Amino acid sequence: MERRLRAWLEEPALQGETKRNAAAVIVLLVLLGLGLYMHFGRSGPQAAGQEAEAENFALERLEGGLAKLSDYRGRPVLVNFWASWCPPCKAEMPELAAFAAAHPDVAVLAVNLTFTETGLEEVAEFAQGFGSEVSVLLDETGSAAKRLQVAAYPTSLVFDKSGVLRETLVGQTDRKRLEHVFYGEKGKVDS
Image (cartoon, rainbow, N blue to C red):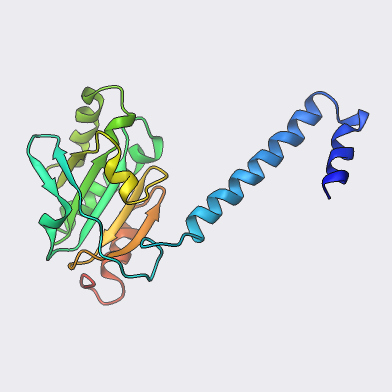
């Protein structure tokens, strides 16, 4: 297989732009495979269906003070990791705000990946769109993202009332999907 690929790439007809296009397609296929593996093939506590109590974290609130994940024990929690420079994060922000406003029984924590930002001004400006129902936290060192194995932005983590990670939503989400995850067919927050 490798010999055939090498011979094909060395053909005189595949010089210049055609060769670059072929290399780009191969790179894209590898990246697509990696993305699919990360989305569907994950193992560990965040894989769907596995029960594992979440690692606690303590982060500074944008408005000041410290917040810990364990502070919300007894309530279902949505933890959304985002950055102000991330287009899918910008697109999902109104959906998160609408979900938080409609479902005050769910604690919604918007964790900014502050270590990827150029300054807090952009973060504060972006966070105004969340509304008062969403707590904005600052992951200044990336410790929470690393501890919870967040590799793509945005990523939303769903915790039950006991602090058990129930689902990981990688990529942009919307209110309808969040309502299905939290309320399912029963019409109430799953435990």
